[in-house]
Image 1 (spheres, rainbow, N blue to C red):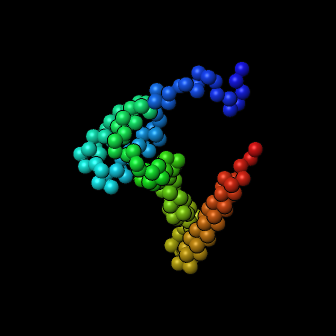
Image 2 (cartoon, rainbow, N blue to C red):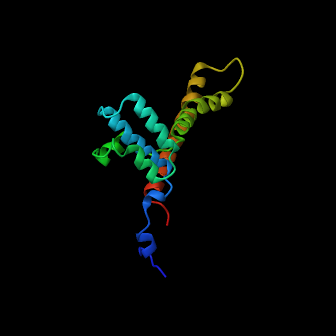
Image 3 (cartoon, rainbow, N blue to C red):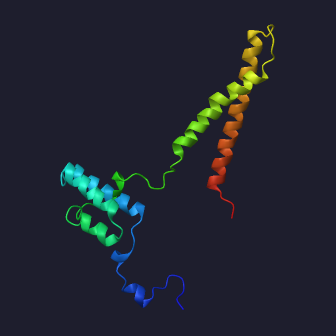
Length: 157
């Protein structure tokens, strides 16, 4: 029985080229192709054709055939620098939009609801209620931000 970190003889002889490539692997190869294009090794048409082949590739061997002659001497660091961070949150823009909603729009709605009605409401009362509501929302937002950051840095076991 094989233990952790033990490589079986069958796995030692296995060729990685037959393994399926992930989306992140394809993105890394496209980053290498973009580097080659920026260095003048590929024309724009070649870049487009090879990028299409990359996205159609299923295995590492197919990916290697697309880039074999072009990217052989490009350092891996340069290829990764052209590739966007695959771990970047795809919901980032939505989260930013919700933060703006929370910081600007929602407190305004709450302030309007809390305003005392009637024709005798003074400007000072309106300004005071709006200022207090916005201040409370921003204090709660800052508290939520700091508490979520400390939870990310110190995850529970």
